[in-house]
Length: 283
Image (cartoon, rainbow, N blue to C red; front, side, top):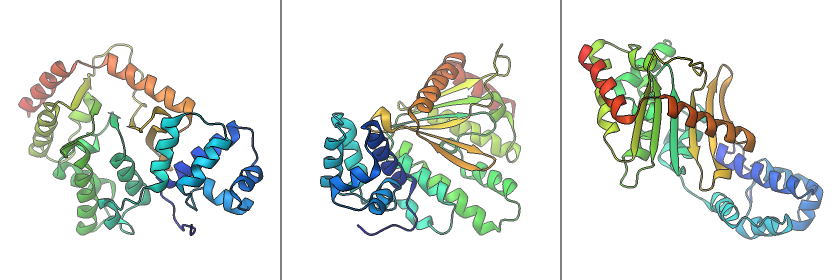
């Protein structure tokens, strides 16, 4: 298969998972290359996502790596043979690559969790809220650029609005609900939007109030995307040096535990809706 100049995060993840399987089997890259009849450079390109791998070759590798996890192997085959060119491709070259990688990750996710402390999670945002946010963070952007970023965020909502929506849970701190991104009317519309979405059977919204005792988890913001098997889950976190896609097994377990802990200390969904409704009435 021809080499890719810019592999996506999904393609890089496939290569990384194949490398993990090889290392777990105690094989060197040169040994794995010989099993496929390729050279070490080609093997390195497969494991870095620069080159693709066919279903036949992937299953041969899995067999030689003594991997017996059928669901994992099938999921990796699906990643290797997927030729989807999703709606996000029209933004390629116009938006940062992590934006597109997140859209692709969401498209293939089996469920989605969000934790946010300063802003309404992207999937719950109104267009006005999103535009105000991007305008403030990027004051040098021309109007058409702000519109493009906001429109991309609005299109990402398809995963919770389509006929077969992804189960979605959001834990939002009261601070994110109270910070006025935009004017009073815009904030009221945003809170109303969150309330409307929270009524859907597949969407759960919980609130962490300011007056919660013994809470020190304000640095726990995350996007957690469930994979076809838990091994292929992904955590996405924004930091000062860019967006990080986290897939190490131990880290995934840590973030799953952290999410459940935040879920336990937050208000129940009905109380959360009442809480948000009360805030909207105050505006």
